[in-house]
Amino acid sequence: MTISKFTIGLDKMFTRLDGYIKKDDFYGDLKPINKKIYSDIGNVIIKILETYRENLLLKDVIALEQRLLKITEILYNNMFSQYYVTFKWVNESDIDSIDNALNASIYDIQSTNVIIQNINRKKVDTFDSIFNLYMNRIKWVIDRCIEFINMNKNNSENVVKLYALTTIVNTFYNMRKKDKIKEKFDIDDYIYTINGPLLNEIKKDYLRKEPTLLAFISSSLLSNEPILENSYVKDTLLSICDIDPSDLSPYQNSWITINLWESNIDCYEKFGAHLSIASNYPPMTLAPFVLASFYMKYDLRKSSFHILEDLKIAPFFESISMNEIVKMFFPTIGTLELYRVTPEDQNKLVSMNDGEIRALLCSLLLLNPNLDESTKAIVINESKKPHSGYEISDMDIPITIEGKKHFVCLPVKSGVEIKSPSVPSDYLHQLTRPFLLYPFASCIFITAKPCSQPLRNQINALIQKQFPIYVIENQTLIRLFKSKQLM
Image (cartoon, rainbow, N blue to C red):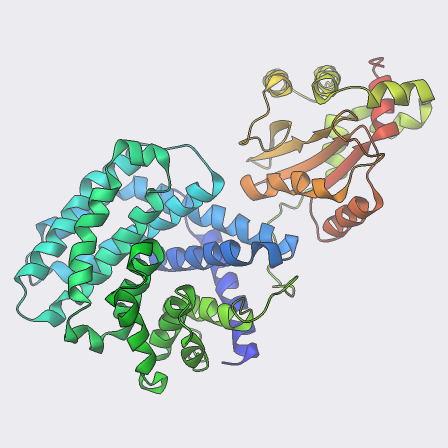
């Protein structure tokens, strides 16, 4: 592996992904290969964010989160368009045709796994008809795979069935983390049903000729079932260390490196040293190469990293003018020098809590001739909404820009909440949160106290990178309220 190949591979993976996202209809049917590419890249992004989030530049975290959101939307909408029809194909297949049907169904299972993992990460409390359908139809796939494994005389014919079952059980492990799913379905029963055949098959000699599958099954079991730590499953995974990486394909080396690294099996470096990919960076093998290379280049098992280098993944932003949005929401912003601020005004503002500031903002926006009545109704609701863990900002107001819904988000910080003389940089995440959760958004930060210099420096750095952020602080906020006789 060379750093240059990793760098080129990372760039190509995201450049191609952005091209797919622009081209694909969010509500249309996807080709099987596109499902796999989206699922593989989604999995890479999830692994990078889970493992390296604290080490990444904020810009890169946002860029990765934005792409994961788009991947999840595309995969989710595709599920609605085809209703897991591939599972029906598996159920209707005979022994000669089932592997073709299973290969297609695996892409849908991988898609569902990405969706579930992202729902878990966002702590979204949702479970709807599409997942009910998944749970009803996945039984067909499980039953057919186990049926054919039990009847097969030729063990090599079990390979695709085992890939399918391992992919399914990984999805169940992620579903098990969601209480609402656990309440509705007995996920542990499904896991037990699948793990029986998996535990039985990895004992058999024929899988020694399938080291990628063997590593996949063993890593899945070890990562999710701590009780197996001292069992033959770990010995099975350790036995892969005896394989000569030069006897494997680049694709096999990538996946084995990933599974060994994630299972903390020391010989992962042996396989990581042989990472490679064809010079045209094939889309079907690119994602595992990038993830394995990422683990090797930034090997947290060997050393710690404070901040990784810039991954050079640009966040998605609309081409908008923040000055125009601010003028639209606060038309008097250009004439504020006319209004004098007294010490009494400042004392009054910093003594307000965020509910009082939101109420004044609501009154200010209701007097705005640029906003229509439906938007003003949203303003009223947003100004009164309770704080919760699901909140994106204090007030999220949708407008339409060139036919697209765009959320103008107003995080509010009061003097009561901020005990220090200025707003510390710890609050930067509240300004960037809208870009993680909305496809199109901008942020107007409303604060009673001025920003601290470290926070201001970080905000300016983001603005230079085209983040649509604007700050209304302290005296500017007082003048805005005075411009409509609200203070």
